[in-house]
Length: 226
Image (cartoon, rainbow, N blue to C red; front, top):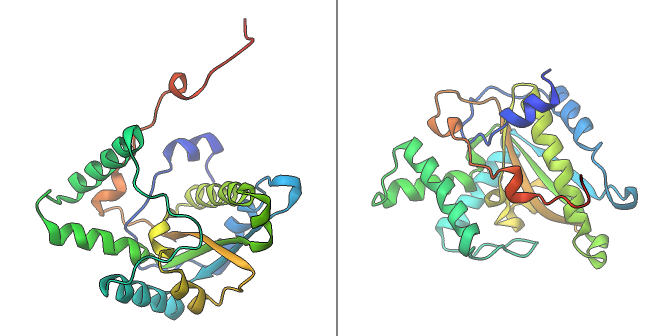
């Protein structure tokens, strides 16, 4: 196990995996750490539906069929829509980094489409963790989503510290009816996102990409200090 600081500094999104299975015991261990996350009034709104094998293959197939068939995305939380300004610039920057690593040219529509479809296939990872939260908390605003996000970050950090890779992947649940059906998710839970997870394929070029981060001086202000 690595130190927390090292895990936070080294962690990056992994989008290429080996076919080596991940033991249930390891998954239970990292989830047990992730759910130590804080939550508003200790509501603990999160649920994690862990998929592998035939169930995950059915989700992949259903997502792919619907997307290629032109079925509009169907998410259970509001879409982020089209980013603009500096946020769009950051989105473009990471796309450029990934495409450069994978050798995907700007004019190569087929390769770009294949990359997009990898996301809907949850990057062919051996495990997908579908994260949901209690629907009853929707009337209390977005705080349950905030809390679930803390647990998701804990999940990917705990996975990384054990040599596993992960990517938080909203594409994997953009056809939420497919996910709900095959993962047997109860109606009282809202599907938030998923985490593709497995042992990293170190020969997969995109896995070496590190997204850029702003400096502390750009994101934090300090008041009242000497």
